[in-house]
Image (cartoon, rainbow, N blue to C red; front, side, top):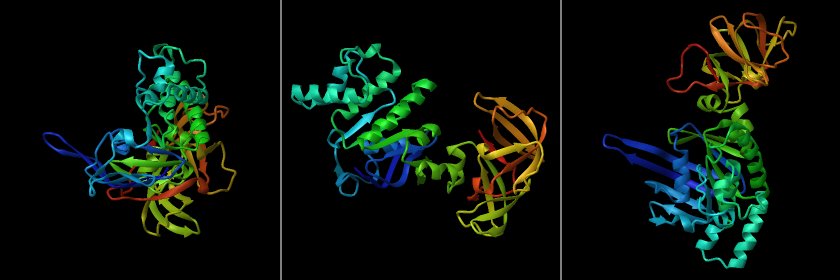
Length: 376
């Protein structure tokens, strides 16, 4: 079921100032997709989710779920949370510790006075879906973190909601369990063909789970797109920087060559994709992901974007090395396969394919020829 958010604003007041948590947010969340709200802490993503649920009342705007307007400031409409047909999974799971698994999952149906036989049937079905069949009588306090997360998911699904919403539900799990659970969650939600809205500040989680991502900053939507588009060819410098590790190299566009452009930088001319049509003479920033930078002892390729540098630092992170390569006054971060023999202090050549780096416009206050920004 589609969700439409039109001009939603939410403000909070303290003794000394007014804080605008949401700033004229306009967003359409497609039906039957996993849609993620991604952004740093304090960007407004949880506030937006709570406005959709009805736990927060916006100061302006309108929210529709399917064909029903559930909030309209101008028309004085406010549908209570329990009447919006939504399921919710919270960060803390909100599992009742004095109940067993069956009673936790059945609670939404019991509160609606659903017939007992129908409750048993629906709880059995949803526990089978989340692979917790046989756990019905298990006390909630005896469950692992991953199992508690599944109970919270089952409880949100048992009432067959139109939309299910998640507020950073995996943040309390350890790294390995979080990775396993997000794979399971992606499978569950895809098979259900349900609209899911997912809030997280974890870029890996967003990329792995989502059909589409909306990146937020300071209460506003910066960019919306599919994960690959957001990661490989973002339209905004903030998004390119936030969504993954990036080398952001400032310069000036000197030449246009079809879909590519040459940008003059502090390390020399670099060719990259110019999907935004930045013109000659304009300042721009070239974004190069560390995984698309290649090292070699000699330059025998004759290709573009090849530079001589020195390995300044090298850190082993398990599946790769992370290295800082200095080219003149510029420091670039790269990912190096563990099989490559390289050490700190080595001189080498570094290269990157023009199709795997892209130009971004310089926004207000971002101009100049400053030092390259390498984000890890």
